[in-house]
Image (cartoon, rainbow, N blue to C red; front, side, top):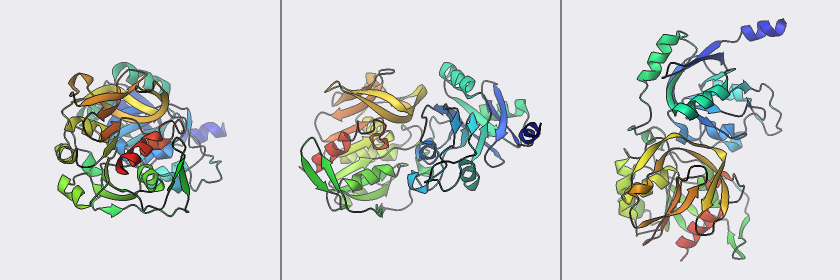
Length: 385
C-alpha cells in the first residue's frame, strides 16, 4: 500500500505522437514540455554517451532496453559538455547506481541539465509503432496533460527535414584538442610497428559539426595533433592551418541544408586526405554529387552488422543516423566500401581518384569492440605517405 502511494505521488508525464497515440507515465527529469522526432536506440548500455551525443539534437530518444541508469553517470565517459537531445524515454529508470566509477545518478544528471524525461510507459509498444509507421514527431509534457492539445503540438513540431541543427551544437571558436593522458604506445598489429601517442604526428583539422569527444581522443592517441574548427569554416580556413589531413565529424539532422559544409569539402577534395564519420560521410557524398534520403526509422544502436566489401569481413558497429546516402545517385568517382547487413544501405564510400573515404557508422564507439579501428590507422597511413 505504501509503495502504491509512493508511485502515485510521482509527477505525471505524457508522450504524444503526431498520429494521435498518447502514452502516460511519470517524470524522471525536470518539469516542462519539449518536442522533437521520436526515435529509438537498441543499445543495452551507453545511455550517457547517447545523452551527450550532439547528433541527437532535435530528437526524443527511446531506449529499448527495459532498465536504464543502473551504473549511474561518470563524467569521464561523456561525449560532450552537456546533453543535446530534446527528451528521453525509458521503461524503467534505475534509482540505484551500482558502478564504482559512478558520480551521480541518471535522474540527478537529467535534472541538473534540464532534460525532460519520462518512464513507466510501454516502450515495446512505442518501438513497434515507430518500426511500423516510421519515426514521428512527438511531445513530452509534465505541464499540459490534455491529450488533444499534446497531439496538436506534436503535429506542429518542425521535425528534422530541411533544418540546420549543426549551428546549434558546433563550437564557436577553433581550438586544439588537449587531454590529460599518460604517455602510451599504440601498436598497429597488422604492420608490427609502433606509433608514439604524443600528439606530435600528423596534423589533423577536424571540422566539428557536432563531434563526439571520443573521435579526437582516438586521433590524439594515435599520435596526431588535432585542431578543431567550427563546421562553418571555409576551405581556406582549413588549409590555413596547414593540415596533413581533414576529418569530417558526426552531427545532427538533415545533411542537405548544409551548403557551407558541402562547399568546403568540395574545396578540399584532392588537396589533403579526408576521413568522414556519420554526418561527415553524408556530407562527403553530397560534395561529390550524391543525394541523401530520410530513412523510415534509422539505425541507432551498438549492435549493427556491417560488411566490408573488399574483404567480406563483418563488423559489429555502433550507429546513430536517420538519413542515408541514396545509392542510385552515387557518382562514378565514389565506390561503396561498406554495406549494412540489415537493410543493404550504404555504410561507407571511397573516392576512386583522391584520398577520401567515409563510413556511416561510429568506429570510435568500439562496438566490436575493435572491429573498426583499422579505419583510423588507414587515415593515419594516408597522412603519413
